[in-house]
Every structure is written in structure tokens, then in C-alpha cells.
Length: 97
Image (cartoon, rainbow, N blue to C red):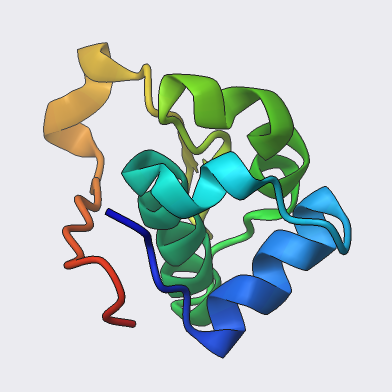
């Protein structure tokens, strides 16, 4: 299966990984979900700057971190505080933005 990225996702991938998007990314649903998640969270007002910088390594573990909101720092490994934090789970059908 080949992932069909929308223009906004392609722009984000090029910004994060350079103009040459690795061909393997077109077969990696985790990368597609992570990029979609970054766009969604940024559009919702979250600070994803550090998560974008970390994505070069964190995509291998299917993680976005750290994500900041106005109240507190949310981290994908902050399971101890789960009851006090809002977590987003993004499910996306490939090729649908």
C-alpha cells in the first residue's frame, strides 16, 4: 500500500526531512499518522516545535514528543499522569487528510 499524502502533509515532510522525501515514507503508515498529528496539533494551538525537531528519530518509535499546550507539557511517555492529561489519538485512513 502506498500512502497518498495531501499537499499540507507533503509540505511538512519536505520541511522536516528535506526536499527528497525518503521513498520508504510512502509505505510507512506511522510516518503518515505522525505528520498528520503534527499538523492537527499545530492547527489546534499546540507548540510542536520540539516534536518536529525530534521527528527524525522519533518516527522510528511512532512517537511525537514533546507537545506543549498552555497548561502543561504532554509527553507520549507520561503514563503516570494520564488521568490528568488530555491525549489525542489520531486515526486516519491513508490518503485522507
